[in-house]
Length: 316
Image (cartoon, one colour):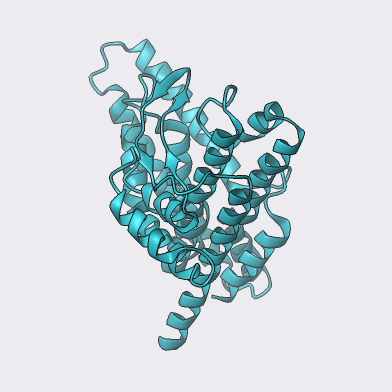
C-alpha cells in the first residue's frame, strides 16, 4: 500500500512529463508495429483464412501476457535489492496513474476557451476521438467533462484497482489492454475486425472498475454535489451509451452536476447518433470542467482510503 501512496503523490506532483520514459509509450509503439505487420501479412496473403480478427486475437493475448509477465519477472528478480526494488516498483505503479495528466489536459481546454473557440477546439482534439473543428463552446465543455468522467475510470480507478489486486504487473497489464483498445478498438470499417478482440477484452477488464468508479464518485461527493441524482442518473441511463462501461462514470457526473451529457457527435467526418445522459436541468458551463476534475480527485482519494482500511482489517 505504501508504494501505491507514494506513486499517487508522485503523479500529483509530476504528472506525466512529455519526455519522461514511459511504459505506455513503448506499448503504443509495439501495438503500432504489430498492426503494420499483420496488415502487411494480410495484404500479401489475400487467401489467408485466419483474417484480421484472428490476428487481433493473437495480438491481444500476446500483449496481455507480455505486459504482466515481464514486470512480474523483473520485480521478482530485484526484490532482494532493498534499495532498487522500492524505486522500480513505485516507478512502475506511478506510470499507470494518469490523474494529474488528465487534470492538466482538461484545464488546457478550460483556459483555451479564454483565448478563442479555435484554441479550445485544438486543445480538446488531443484528448478526444471526435471531430472538434466545428464544436460550439457548450459542446467543447461537454466533451471535456465526458472525457474526464470516462477517464477517471480508465486512467485512475481501473489501474489502481488492478494494482491493488495484482501489484504493478496488474496495473501494466490493464494499461496494455486500455492502450490496445484506444489504438485498435474503433468501430469503423478499418478496425472492425482487427480491433474486435481488443475492444471486447477492454470491456471485460473495465466491467467492475467502471461501476466501482460511478459508485465512488457519488459517495465521495456527499455534502458537495447532488448524490441522489448521481445514483439515479447512473442507474436510469445505464443503457444510453455505446460503451457498456463508460456510461457509469459519465452518468454519475451528469447526475451529480445536474447537467446533460451525450448526444450526437462527429467521428472521422461522420455523425454518430448517441442518446443523451442525464436531465437538462441547467446549462453546462466552464466551471463544470473544474467540478469534474474535483470529482475525479475525490474518487481517487476515497478508493485509497477504502484500500487502506481493507489492508488494516486484513492485517497487511
